[in-house]
Image (tube, rainbow, N blue to C red; front, side, top):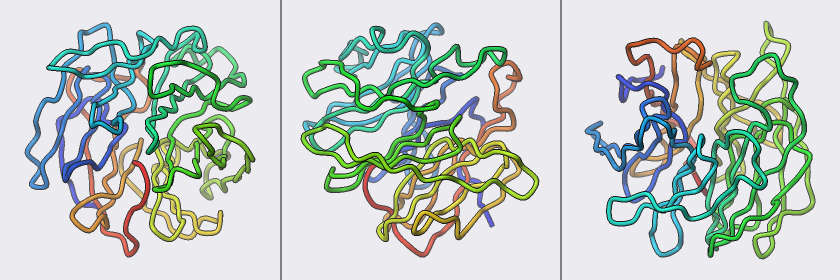
Length: 284
């Protein structure tokens, strides 16, 4: 049974377990937070109203990176300021979204490939963006249908990306930051749903994958590329990460509404937790 960990969030996303704490972006409140194990929250950085923070990660030297969704840039947080680390606009005509940073400092940034909340525009294939440790921007992988949540193994040799409009995950081999050997993993929808739109994902120590399925209001677990567990939720799960002292606590970000068009004046987002048998691995 899920346990409430945090409430009063507008749109919690991109959770990370790092340095003994839970970090996440409250996208619609323009704020990056860090939560202690007891649920105490601390503002890491507050962006102006014209910028929504997305994916979070850390370079090998400990510098924090934050995706600027609306500005289509990748920021470094330095001495309390957000400094542009990379300009993504050449490869991102619309809003960018999530991100993971590999052990070598390569950042992989996802994007919708269309105006994020324009439901009248068809989805089209787009690219996962790779940002090298020194801030150079290049195509990481192409022909993806709304690349969203991203996870990378501890050794940095494999990466998984959720394709929200493709109803699948895609696995890649990683060598010197370059992605290759794509392997699609189709996802089975819930019994009453025609489609799976996977959002945030994370890995466990036995090669399993946890993925948020917002439309079906569930979090699913895959072993050997097949769904073997699901956790129903009242709200729309947006992303998840395994953390805690033993990395066996699954933190799930959820919200009552999924589209920004339906945003309410009061915060409707939360983080809930579920204990798991297998600890987390990799990033996030």
